[in-house]
Image (cartoon, rainbow over all chains, first blue to last red; front, side):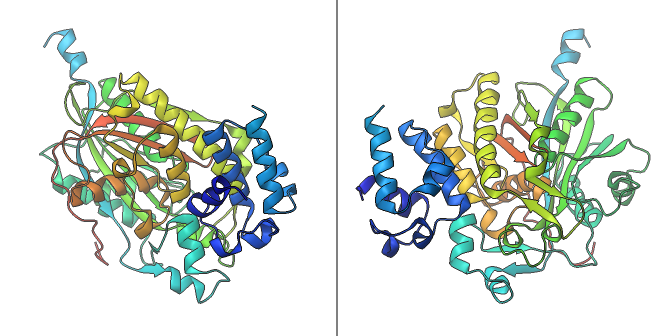
Length: 76
Length: 333
């Protein structure tokens, strides 16, 4: 996972750092429905990218989520 | 008096604040003893550590009377000519809360009415009160926000029970000049009934809330209304000394402040001690912050709120010199 996503998950979403590994599922990392929305809003505010709630929820692992975000940011 | 000076005297100026909280508090530890949740989860997700909860012997009317009495006691000598009570949780369907509150405050005879606009209720009430003053109908209005939201959630719902508390806050508005400290600036208000289902309760104990969608709408609406209200006042966002957002959830207010670029030391908050108190939240926060010195005379202050309806709003004022007291927590009036 990139440092950017790790920082967002720990500093902004207050998820437990010891659960944030590439192969962790979002459920395991502590994502609930509100965290999904918060992340979507935050990605728009901070990076100007639009990633929907369902795109976030459909990411199988944090590594996949990170890849999705990186791809969107590079594609701008 | 010339026409120009009459118009100049029809701005609505805050000249006193008052606050009332039930003496009984419920801590996160009290909740984790009966609900499947943790103190850490509640604090990190909501910013709340305790909430004040009224017992059966303390009604919305009682809370409103206490906050109103404190505002009147702290006010410069004025004759209150109207009362507006913002509440979503009146003690009964009929009659309204405000006439009873007026009579208990010794104000029998004045126009007194309730207004419901969810957690934006206080800003709606301020606006209609300012309208009464601007129209020349009255010169002084007591505006109270009072709610008992702790009774709204299903008692078994671990996601909503921790969010809510009870309380009341009040301000006295008098006629004055638009350029004096305490004068309300331009107000932005809005609503969207398409979102009515996102926060709804058919009766106490049956609150339904779509947390994710509420979060998204609250951040969007409060930040947009705040931009509009500051622009209408001729301010830059960088001019804002104190941001006073409705205390819904610390995560929502953090997002709003970040969007507006208001740094942390300019944000006021009391959600840790009170939870979400609905229409009471903004006047409670004003009273508390003025009493503890975080809100000082001369501070350019931005108020914003969002609530069930959906409703939202924002306005500005330069904080006046007042002498507010800590919230009254007497068990009897």
